[in-house]
Every structure is written in C-alpha cells, then in structure tokens.
Length: 439
Image (cartoon, rainbow, N blue to C red):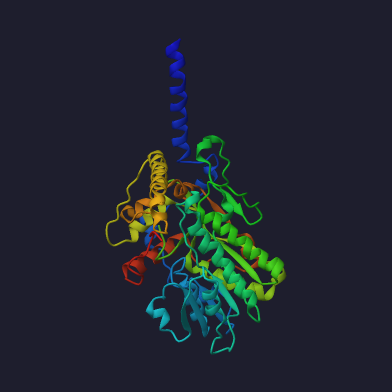
C-alpha cells in the first residue's frame, strides 16, 4: 500500500512530463494549420524565380513629399527597404533617422540624407524631424517609425526598462514632435503580430487554447506578465499611436507584420507552421498605408493592420530545407528535443536573473547597473522561455482587412523570398553581421 501511494506521484509526474513533451511539438489546434502546409520537391524549388517581380506594381506613384524613416539603417531596419522603395518610385526628399548610418550605397543617393538620432531623447528627435527639406522647404510630411529594440528573449521585470525606453518612450517622443510640426505629418508605426497573437501556455498542456489563426477583428489579448518585454512594449507603443489619432488629431497607423519577416538580414521545432512575409512586401505596406491615410483617413487612421505574405503557411522544416537547397555551401541544422530546450531555457532565465541580482549591489556602489547579458554568453542568451513562446507555435495570419482597406497585395511567396535572401547573402550584397544578434 505504501509503495502504491509513493508510486502515484511519480506516475502523475511521468504522465505530465510526457504530455508536456507532446505539447511542445503541437498545440491542440495544430492540425488545422499543418494540414495545408505545402510540400516541395527539389524540382519545385529549382523552378522558383523572383526575377519577374516588380515592386513598383505594388505601391502608389511618387508624391514628392518629405519622408522621414526612423530606424532606416537596420533590417527591421534593413527597413532600408522602405528607403529603397521610395527611391525606386522617384521620391526626392528622404531622411533616415537612426543611431547608425545606413550603407554607403544608400547614403550616396542624392535623395537620401542621414541624421544621427537617439529616439529616447526628445531633443534629438525634435532636431532631426523639425529641420526642413531643401527640396520642399518644410519638415517631413510622412514619418515611418520602424525603430525598435527587439529583445524578444526577455520577459523578467528587471529587463523591462531596456525595451520600454526605446519602444515606448521613443515612440512617445516621435509622436510629441509630430504634433508640434506644421503641418502635422502622418505617422505610420511598424509594430508586430506578436502584439495581438497572445502567448502560449505550454504548462497547461492539452488545455491551452492558443489560437492558430488571428485577424484584425479578434480581441487584443489582455496584459500577461509572462509575455516577452518586446511584445508588451510594442503593445504599449501601439496605444500611444492610437491615442494620437483619437485624441490629438494626428493621422496615424499601425502595421503588424508576421509571423516572421523574411529577408537577407533576417533570422531564419521543425513541425511548427506559420505564414511569413517578405521584407519587400512589408515595406510596400507602409507606402500603401500612407496612400490610404491620404484617401480615406476616416476609415484607417489610428487603426492596426495585420499583414503577411502570399501563399500558405510553411513549416520550419520546409523553410530550412529550402535554404539548404539554395545554399552553395553545406548547412547543418541540429535538431534538439523540445522538452530539453524548454528545461534549459528556464535554467538560462534563472541563471541570468540570479547573476543580475548578485551583481546589482556591487554595481550600485559605482553608480550603475550590471549588464543584462554577459558578453561571453553570446547567442546562447536567445535560449529562454520567451523565445520558445514565439517560435513553438502554429500561426496563420488573416490580412484580408489590409487587402481590402489598404489595397495591400503581397508580391512574394515564401519560396521566392528564401531564394532571394540566399542569393543576396551569397552574392555579398548584405552586411557581414546579418542575422540574429544581441542588441
């Protein structure tokens, strides 16, 4: 009898661990997403081409207005793609605001200027945005706010300030200056699908009702402390953008690309499927939103729109297979058990929190705070629970509302974008440190 009573907790623990391992490979609603995931042969991938895509077919004609692209030097930030589209369609007044200058081939264009800007400083933002363009004799008419700090792996309270300062206070500074300018410019904010997709609850195993499909009309998830600092800060910034339209009279808009933005500078457990968007289509959506704010501001100002790519959801396994097919050098993807990753992720989070709290008293003596991440840890810092929350999910984005109101028409499917990205990297057309890195 005693042995039976003692064995019962062990049996329950074993059963729960087994069910958790299964949950980390599929959600209760995964079948609906994975059923329609495409399967490509080597012949199919080899026939893929993107040469016929003309992005000028996807955007309105030039307006010859003044454009400020905040965060225009990097990739969510190689949002330099917005700058490239503006140049392609003939705009002559483009100003990039960033802490780092863009690539020389962008800055050398006569239509482009650069102002080193710290968006956490109201004065820095004011100086960068208030200066008139020589060509039009006025400050920017349109502000594309793409700047963000993307620390998606952090969710603990002690990490919050880093994301809050850039993503929330920085957005507030841009809106404050926009309200001061005459005439007031349009402000289009680049957010993320993570602000409306919620957060999976893996520990609930079979009782986790995480949605596979999301659309603009779905109710925005309530504040959840366990979400990543990135998602929470972006949602707070969205509220500022919405309020600026509703209460301050600015013409504003929010774009939520997702689930992953694919491009030469982007980051790239196997069965999970999701819709993805090419960086070129994401850039085009910004120009389409600007056009809609000119045409139908009463319908689109202060609104948020999900946007995704063309075609069905792809599994991570097939994305990796396509990358390997197009790559000219051998790529090795190591497959790790999701349960082991989940346990190590929590251990990593605990270690970093313990390290920070142990170093904090000593740092305060010298008037500072310890770094959130030790330099020697490198990319291993990404393996934390918040990262898995954003990756171990099936997610299909319904962007029909953006297609209806903004006229959004994605030009790229996933296979085309993967081939383009691999070609650009292999041809040396991207910066050497492309991809995922600690910010």
